[in-house]
Length: 289
Ligand SMILES: [Zn+2]
Image (cartoon, rainbow, N blue to C red; front, top):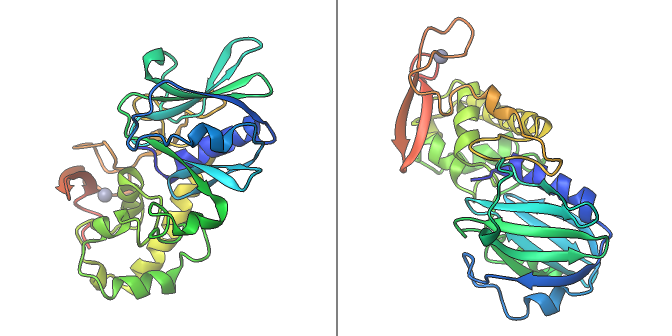
């Protein structure tokens, strides 16, 4: 599932190709995504100019001139392809790298004025799209309960401290919960906790001040580095420029079961456990507190 860095990479790629373009036509081949595409979907966005592409947590927002926005969640396997009709070349905006995408999974195509098509392809159809009024986005059911953006100033030591003192949950679950901090998922929480040398099962109200400060710092650092490297290309994931992200080469613990610990001088190895049914990787030696 794409997490904040991958969605941000898609946003940046999309922004380059679609900002300022008008939506000429929309073809809906399958309206049964995670939520059914509304009947007014096309009417609400047709002939509208795309002013910008933004992101909130793991959601993309294609903002339109009529003060509406297309909210997109990529779910598990949602990908956006950009097809240039002039030379029939296709670029992938998604982090899942797979050039052999199947036409039967193309559910929605936005035909833009500059001979560019945006193709929404989603094998498992857990992704969705909705048109919202820009003014009302913050009240939307998917958006209203989201915690602060981890890369914003609102995600800081005093904020995190104020949230953890009331909670007895383990730190892995806590950071995965979108209401405390938004945009993180399984890969990055595993990696962040490793870089903080914190055990994923540690109860959050028992974290030291130093550990809380470390979580804030390492969260920002990890996400920024991944965005810079084009996100993580696991299985079949990549960015709009058609390039693979390379952050997966930097994984310290994720998907490295029984492998040696990558921390300098640590002789431990990576163990896998399940927390809340999600695979959790950590070093038993250096993440022991
Ligand atoms: Zn270690």
